[in-house]
Length: 90
Image (cartoon, rainbow, N blue to C red; front, side, top):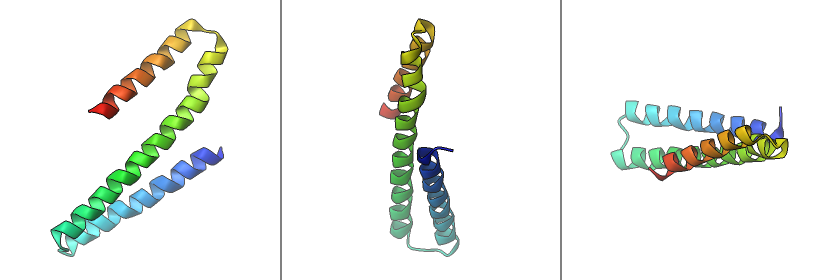
């Protein structure tokens, strides 16, 4: 497994712990603003994980399609990227 995938998995495990922490905060009737701050932290951490996954995709899958000289595969990867960027803007 590549270092980038290990880093992404570790990041996701930390996020998983953060989400469990938010659940525990709600179960313990913690102050709403404190819970909301933690939810914002989870969203920021997910955004960073998303960026890392996108970078990994561009560095591996997309670059392989470009190097392949397969026009159909290049189109598929290009369209995937366009779709991803459209979803990020929403």
